[in-house]
Structures are given as structure tokens and as C-alpha cells.
Image (cartoon, rainbow, N blue to C red; front, side, top):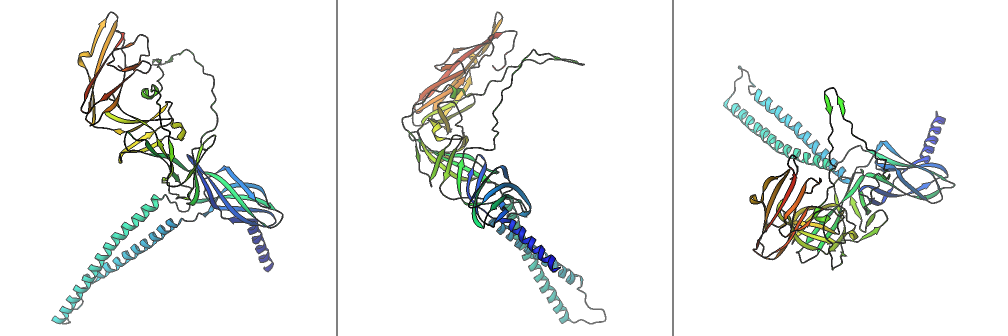
Length: 537
């Protein structure tokens, strides 16, 4: 029996020497648009021979294909792999543990108060149901009655008062318990979440200490761009604050780490598109038992485009933008495939799935301002800022908070992925400039001449400047575009507009003095065969 115990101890000690668990520390995190590369480091003392090292306490969302391991020291790395530990569970973050401890204390207090309430209710029931405690042969004096009455009154009063106090305390404790549970749920905490591990097979000729640097990608993280645009007036440039909303649900806190924000995305499909032959043939109707199914030819839907930006002219800017200092230093590196922003101050990102703002950069952008309206779609006037040479800022599409003259205006969407020479940013509507678009009944008619029908359409746009300063205003409208040579669209009266026939664009540029009112009128006609119908007029 003793020999067997010794053998078991030797085998257990050998197993512990072969497979030892080692904790590692996060060295750097590179957060991509979707996913994050987590770099870790660990120091390990190994014995001679082949052995297995387990790097535990890792996220279970590791992409095995992304694992990179570098061993420094007198040892050889034989293999490295990723696996899931279903028996061990990750350590609780400190704030989660505090909340859970508070939840246990509150729950225990509620249980005890409920027990105490049951005791008091039982005592009250006993007193009320046993008020007659003497038989008929016993004589009871007035003094006895007075003493019994005092006992009932005093004890029942004590019980009622204590029950009332307990009910108040129970109410408060239940509200506190509900708040803690909601806080735990808000933190997206999951008890018993499994762990990931990196298993290393290492060989060494002698006992030595090595350092292991390894990295992997987890898809449970990412960031999205968000901007703050601040403008102090149309005589000033735009201040653009570029920020990153970083989130992660890896199951582990990122405490005091070196953070890098990258515009890359390793999770997208990197296979190049393959263009296959495109075959066409005559359409053959499918004959069914109930008749013939005919498929009518349909014109391809036009590609969505912005007729204002597509026909926009190039804008010259006199000033060059300069990157203004932000609260801490950020080093920008432009690679072939992405731009990286290395944050020089340690960051902490909890694993709660919430977005945590990290400032990236701040720019002073020269801009040209003008007022713009499209009364066909919205009878309001918008202040626009046009930014030239915007490609140098490496911006991405994202939500933008607008502040004008110190006041929060609202949100818009910044889309730098356009083909125009200038980036147009809407700074909000100005209700002090009025605009109305009305159909002119005198210029609206239908008439038939020969085999053709002609429809005449006329509109009037009324503008008024209620501001105390001169404004330069662009008015945009449009004519329909014919896709058939039998349908003829003609601009009868442009009203002083610049007309672009390719896009059907009508553009007016007017200056409105304070209190000034102007009217713009345009008329167009559509001619087509009288026995046909035209949609979209």
C-alpha cells in the first residue's frame, strides 16, 4: 500500500512538472473595426526535457488561426494550440465580486426580515385567539382584567410597530436588490463563463527561465468612429474632434493597457471577387395549366446618386488644416492597409459591451459656408460647410455631434466615402430663413396636339430672409429625366437657374439682404404619345 502511494505521488508530481498553468499579462491591445488583437507576455521557469505549458485565464473567443507565439530563451517551441477549459471558470472582476457580495448580504437580510415577520404574525395570532385564558370556576378581579388589557395593548402595539418597521426596511432592501441585479445585468456579466487556454509544447536541455510573448484575435471587441464638430460662426474654421467608441465582451477587463486603434478589419472576407460569364437569351414564357405567365421587361433601377454633389464644382481653400493638440498624445501610423492610432496614455476598457470613448485626434478644418435648401423635399434652409482635401484626415463614416456657436444642434452623419472634391457637412437648419414651394395653377395644363399629349408643370419658390445679415443661399430643384426617346422633357422657363440636363438639376444661387423676399419660378413640359401613360411626372 505504501509503495502504491509513493508511485501515485511520483506520477502526480511528474504530471505537474509536465503540464503547468501560467498566468500572463496583457501587454497591448490593437482594436480593429471588428475584432481586437490582444498581445500578452508571461515568464516561465522550465525544467529539462519536453513539457507542456498552459497559459490560462484567457478569453474563450480566441480565433485559433490568429495565434502567434514567440519564445525567448534557451528553449525550443515545438507546437502551440488553443483549447477551451470547460472545468475552470474565469476569475470575477473586482466590481462584479463587490456587487455579488452586496447582493448576498441584501438577500440574507431580506430572508431574515421575512422570518422575523412570520414570528411576529404568529405571536399576534396566538394572543388574539387565546384571549380567554381562565375557566368559569376561577374568579377574576378587576385588577387582573386591567393587567391583561395592558399586556394585550402593549404587546400588540410592539408587534404592530415592529412589523411596520420591517415592512419599510423590506421595501427598501427589495429596491436595493433590484438595483444590484439590474447593474449586474447591465454589465452583461455571465457567471461560469468558460475560459480559453493556449497550450505550448516546449523542449529545453536544462532548467532555465524563458519569456513567452503571444498574441491572438478575439472577435468580441471593436470600435466605431464618432465625431464632434464645433463651429463658432461662418467666419471661423471647423474644429473636428475624432473619437473612437471602443467596446469589448471578451470576459476579461482590460486594465491599464497600451491601446492602439486601427482602421483595419481582419474579420472581413479577403477573397477577391471572381467575374463569371454573363449569358442572356430570349425570354420564353412559362405555360401553366391555368394560362400563360408573362414576364414584362423592367428597366434597371438607376444607381442612387446625389445630384448636388455629383455636379458640384471644385472648391479652392486658402488655408491648410493643422492637427490641434488633444488631451494626450496619440501617434498616428499609416500602413498600406490601415491607419493606426497609438494612444500614449494607459487605458482601461471593462468587458461590459458598452462603448467607451477614446479621443483619437483633433483637426482645424478650413471650410466654405453657404445656406442650402431643397424645398421639394424639405421646406427648411440648412447651413452647409464644404471641406476640401478631406482625404488627408483618414476619416471613416460615422455619427457626428454638431455644436454651433456653443449650442448643441443635434446629430448628423459624416460620410467621407464620396467621390466629390469636397466633403459637405450639414450644420443644422436655420428657421430664420423661410422657404415655400407652390405649384402654379396657371402654368399647369394638359393638351393634345396630333398624336402627342403635352403636360405643363409650373412651380414658384418664395424665399425670405428674416435674419439681420446678408445670406448666400443655394436652391436645388429638379426636372424628370426621360429614359425613352418618345418621352421629351423640356425646360420651358428656367427662372435664372443653372440647368444640368444629365442629372435634371436646377440650381439657383441668390443673395438675400436682411428682410428681403424673392420669388423664383420655373416651368417645364413633358410630351409623349397620347395613347401611352407616363409614370413619375
